[in-house]
Amino acid sequence: MRRLGWKSWTKNEDGNVGMIFAAMLIPTVMLIGGAVDYGDAINKKTLLQNAADAATLAAAKLDDDDSNAIITMAKGVFAAKLEGTSFEGLTPDVVFENSQVVLTADADVPTAFMKMANIDNLAIDVRSAAQKGHETTEEVSSAWGNICLLALDPSASIGINVQGSKVAQLGTCWAYSNSDSEYSVDSTGGSYTFNSGGVCAGGLLNAAAVDHNNFNPSVRQGCDQVDDPFAETSAYPSAASWNPTFTIPSYDPDHVCIRDGLRLRRGTYTLSPGTYCNGLEVQANANVTLNAGVYIVDKAPLSVKSGATITGNNVVFFITGSGGRVDVSGGANLSLVGRHDGQSYEGFVIIQLATSNPGAESQINGGGTVNVEGVVYMPTQSLTLGGNGSLNGTSKYFIAVVKKLYIYGSGTLKIVDHQSASLLPDITPPMPDLEAQTTRLVE
Image 1 (cartoon, rainbow, N blue to C red):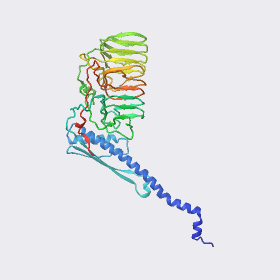
Image 2: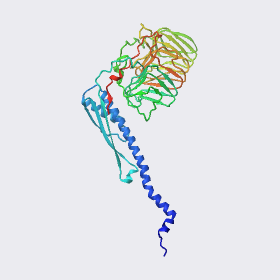
Image 3: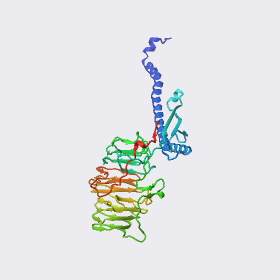
Image 4: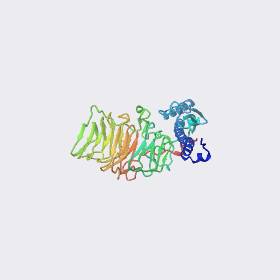
């Protein structure tokens, strides 16, 4: 019988390669699989850390020093941020002392590949601490400038959204989102340009999901919410509590309608102030001039279709009723100058009654010649500024204070802080002193 000696074994190349491959297979799988498991644990730790940071910051901003209320707030935000994830139901430890909210949490992340080495879980833990501020944030510093775009809703999933290849020019003015969401300031695509004096986001932004590279300067995170500059009592959290700083126009839509369901088609028209019940629609090839005054548009939209022209000086639109909103189509020609200094509702050009059609979406689209001068104030409606054309190319004053703000399309959007050449008074809200906002993450 032939014996298999050392030389024979080493000369058997097929078997040799197979044995070497088998010997290397397990450690190779462990190495690659371990990297996968470890990467998954890192991603889950980031998710947990983001939830912890959002929870402590929100609790520290609570205008209350009651320990139970602060701890309840932190746990509630933490749970909400993890809803629908593998960490749903995880209970953190929260402590409030020495004006700091401290949250800690730990969890086990199951492994897939490392089980072969009897490693069933990877332990992760997070810690977040936020300093509660007690200094006033109402003091302002001229160094911070003014707010020209303000998204009021603190609970909005997205406060300010920029899409497409739009160029937004704010000069030295700021954009400000009260939303505490990780998408408080959001963007889609990377071809937009957003130049401003600064951008403030109430939330801690999800850098992994949202590209903010085209914001110049970069977005500032964790900013305190600012009050509605035109109301004594904000429309949030309940629109019923809204109390404006100005007197709402008096009208009786059931009895005093200057026109009812007015639809203007091809032709030239001149309109006078008053209540336009069931909306006002300016259709293609209609050319409309507005006399100075207050225009109340009730129960249905103020609609300006593509190809229509509407011109008015020293005017304000007051949007009311269950269907009230603004719809300016791309291709419309719009030239509006708001109420002058010394007139009622001075400085405003569009005002939405907060309790009328809350949650609706209004839009002002370019494409034609669109110039709006004055303040657009829609406290409980979203506003879209978009289209494939220029907006406010010659406006001397344009700011927007709205529920949420969307900017999309191509072309240029000009947001204009008050210029001396404007006939309107300057009612632009000032920026808070950001250095006085002592509520901040410290760990």
